[in-house]
Length: 553
Image 1 (spheres, helix red, strand yellow):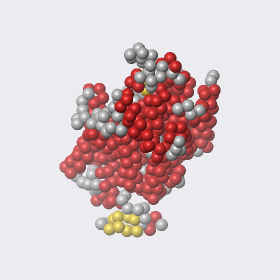
Image 2: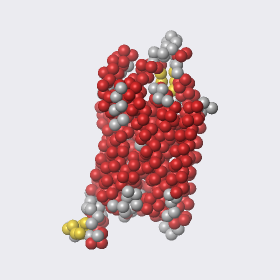
Image 3: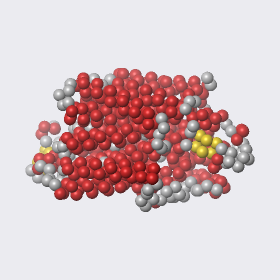
Image 4: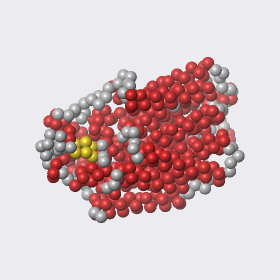
């Protein structure tokens, strides 16, 4: 065993031990603990948990790599994902918290007084969360594969076992406090390398400022190497694709079930708003750093790796070639590695850069631990989302309403284990890179839950028939476009599979509104309850007037 392997392993095992201890200490003993952590999480810690839940393997592992390879066009990911939290925090989160439900499908079922809507929403949740989890498990495979220098697919299965254990055991209560720890690990692991690279390249420890100073240098290198300029817009796609992807990620953020449920774990509407504010701060630390990370990584690769003799490449290249995520081919047989002969996957840039920049063993191990924290935290939240949709929304609310709490917890834990292993099997040979798979999950959320929740909260006339039509239409259109664009080459306005949500959302909004207007309106009581969601908890809307709710004092 080499020293680097031992250092990385010790750091990862230490963090794993911390996560497992937290899960054991906060074991879910009741359904409210398992689904919403007893609704007692303070806003600042919920903000950290949201940050960890949100900053998945796609953000930690894939974000900087995507920006490094796509340049300007990769900014759609940052703008969409960050803007989506503003939408969620101000448009939906406080209102959904006031509803007092455990899950998004339960809110939809009760808001529209329809078991059919509940079941369809639960199925949509399972599809969205399952798709998202494939990306996370694939990310864990990249990390574990590099650590043990084994194929990434074997690393994926190791990740499956870890996630299935601690998600099934702790439930939302255990995962919430585990995610607080995981946020601290992953943000430290992300910031330390980018600060060191900034010092190494520019002499300035503030990467958010310093990387702008050598933007021109990267442009000069691009021109010398004959590649498309890093900061030139729309070189990897059309303007419409950029806008469609940004909208899909933004609206998808506001409709993701596993993110929304985090706002159910606080005690009040006010706490939900503050949770969103804290989450924006914690998420911003990583997202403001990703463009700098990408620029520094590209600069180092262009100046210290490209142009070198292939026989004299650094040791880190052979380690990553073993994982299947790096390919080097001497196309012109000159013995020199050209930039175009270096094929580096989006998914390894963050993991490989500390080695590329020679930042030392501890930083390399820290980044590995941070990447695992990112993958584990989001995958755990996704599995809880799948579990709650099946065990609470379908099993308890529809199939067996007389089931005991013990039976429901057992079904919830079994469903987590089954879902994790099924997602892991698909992640062995993922249908795309991590950021692409995650974008599909966002597109599905954009086409289903975003229209349903926006109209469910802000349009009292929306009814059960409308929301069912919207969910089915949005899901069908989004899935059809993803498949047609990915495998059939079909596009409209140059919008590819990752921007499919814009078509799904348009179809879902249209179907919901048209069908609702063509059918009987909800009862007066139901419409008043919808208006009630928009007011603070101490106020009640009734008979056309707003009253102070004495019971809330």
